[in-house]
Image (tube, rainbow, N blue to C red):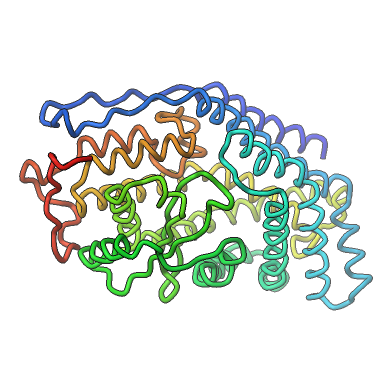
Length: 441
């Protein structure tokens, strides 16, 4: 086990060193092209000192999270704690299902307590220190406990399934587990907007009915009928701004934080809505689930093979020699984290691609390059983003194109001005008129 810990530690530290060495390397900015009107060009603002500090501390915390997750799982394994928890659960209840449920609950509780100090610093103290949080300590703790309870309930509903597959098919469980992950992901996305998200914040209809009318008109232009737009009271928690699309089928909806409604003007908000509608129309949620399923399928086979090797080598230390033993959960979590780290660049590259295409959709349906660019300027300032993070950050942490790249794209992408076809024009029922460049901004 000492050799295993040493090897894994070297891998994590090596990745961390590379990340810290290259994360501050910046990408070159695009130069202004001659056919872009000077009045429409929005320069990429430099990062503030506070944003640079937030970026650097975030990089350190990313490393700390990875190391701490590795150490916690190693603690469960190397001390035999996982096997002792399983034995206690068996003594309390001889039934297989209740043993799994008791073990999973104790595991999640201990993991929650071990990670609580780092979570407090990262999610509460640090956010307040940088002026990004409005959350009271009571609400942060309540939300943390709610997240724990959601995890326990999810574990009770789902944990038995992979362990049942491991018991029934020791050599092919990884394939069947990947297959069942697909309906589970769809189910979670279906129920999250109506059963999980409202546990943490209040969702309701938009208060600004005039703006809602403009958003619904834009949705009709995008070919979306009966669209649902919700406003959520995130200002009780944060000063950051955001909007997103969530749900599936009857629960699909676009959600606006009340903070973004307060910080952006209507033209900027319409571009943001165009971006979210792009996710909807281009089926990005479905594509994201299918791509995640593919990555799970790729990861689970080497995870299966490596878990067998490690159990053969360290079964005396671990206290178990079968993956179907629920005491193997920390080992599976450790290996899943390792393979997730290896596959993250692919997952994030896919995410950046669909976000870029949603940006393109928003520009084509609104044709308001200036409002799109200024929206990203406000996003950078409000969320303490830096415009051009380093390459390693982009590969392992960035789910969206950098703010600098997005502003550059807003400045330079306008095929309608030069008579070129729109990539997504065939999806629009009715084109909006080109915004008047002389209107007051």
